[in-house]
Amino acid sequence: MIPLQWYIWLSAAVFSIGMFGFITNRNIIIMLISVELMFNAVNISLVAFSHYLQDLTGQILVFLIIAVAAAEAAIGLALVLLIFRNRETTYMDELNEMKG
Image (tube, rainbow, N blue to C red; front, side, top):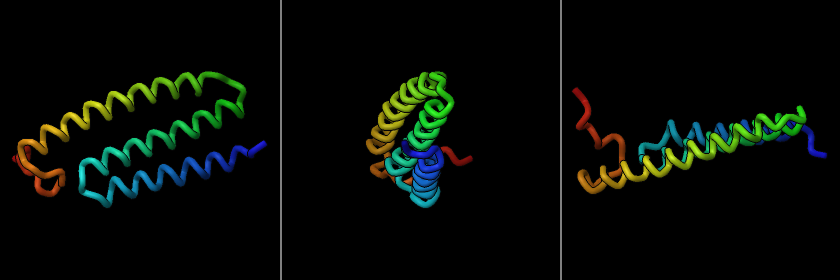
């Protein structure tokens, strides 16, 4: 059996990669992918703790998080498509329409 610490280290590594990608990259699509990586890191830790504690609550919560992540990806990609049609760019630095 794989120890719980290995899952937690894997979750921390995936979350760190997602956070690094979100902070350092200015492309909106890469930022959305990084947010999805962070969601999946949380899912890994929830499933690991749920299995370790022999409780299904964490696994049920994972289904809820997957549904929210799917909705976020669909809405986010639709917004990116609209922004690209209007501005012809997907970089955050070039989008300054909302600045006051």
